[in-house]
Length: 291
Image (cartoon, rainbow, N blue to C red; front, top):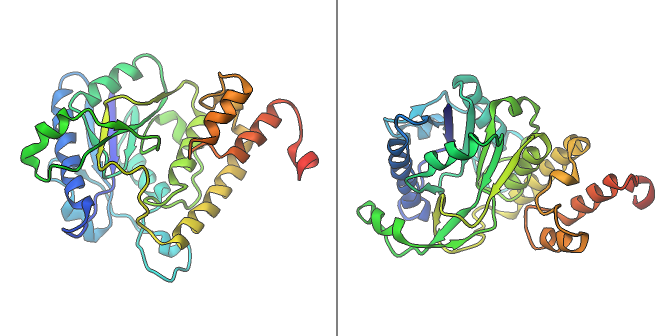
């Protein structure tokens, strides 16, 4: 089995929390890859802009540069050169042939047995996974303390930031021009997995990945980028709606009231979309009956 792990390194300023977080990500990927030697073939792929390629560690595969950004797709008062997730995945998919692909945010670090555990899950027949991170207290600020960081139990986090999928699924994905680093990225990606996977598994509240910082949500970009991504998300849902099935959405195994409660308190299950899917499952045309 070969796994391609896709990341988008960049050059954060030294005062940013992402500066240290990215270094931890690189080092924990190395450790996890070494742990998996002889069991699973892991190729770590850095997909960047030309100005960021020197950040990609020498022992990772630096793929061809990205050509586009959100600035090519919209007009913004504040300039932020944010990559499009579709271009990141396209570059990796064209350059690296693997059985499974991982995309994870650059501030998501791995526990040492990550790839070994992933290999075990995938051998059970799952063709798509979402892995929730643990939140770690930001009390250490040196790679020399990495062993201490890894010993922290951490706390759970509800958001989606690590996605795994079989190569056979990718041709069906539709991600519009969603950019990374902004809300609605994770919803757009996850709904594609729900729509097109045949055997999806959600790994929650488990020590496979972690993020240094206890926040649930940190807004890093101006509201105009959130508005932009929201519109892209609407395009994604319009395109893939016919392929979404309420029975494939997490929590659908619960009684009606319970499932809607769980969807309602989770940011990646928009309640309006869940209602539309439930009506579709009941054979009710929501457009005709509810507008």
